[in-house]
Image (cartoon, rainbow, N blue to C red; front, side):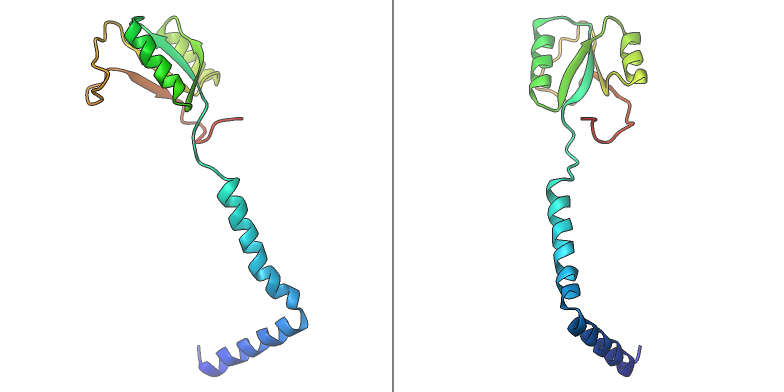
Length: 131
């Protein structure tokens, strides 16, 4: 683009802004409003996920783990499954968004996360939970 052409476009825009000064204000105000709305209204935090739990272990350690799991605020235990097919049904039907299976006789050191035998299942259908 040549300089003469650039100056002509700039001159035209200055004339337009002189005719309607509100357009300049809107050019700065509307993006600020959108920035504010998207900054506070749009959140990608995942919390309060409806979870179905199948606890095969049923020990004090697994109940303590489940209590800490629910206390995190990210998960809400919606149901306790009696078998694995209940977990699959809840995930397939949309009654739960996450399934947690704690295997029987796990004897896990709760500090170690490297070799955790727990199984987490999720549908992955929605990136954010339903209200």
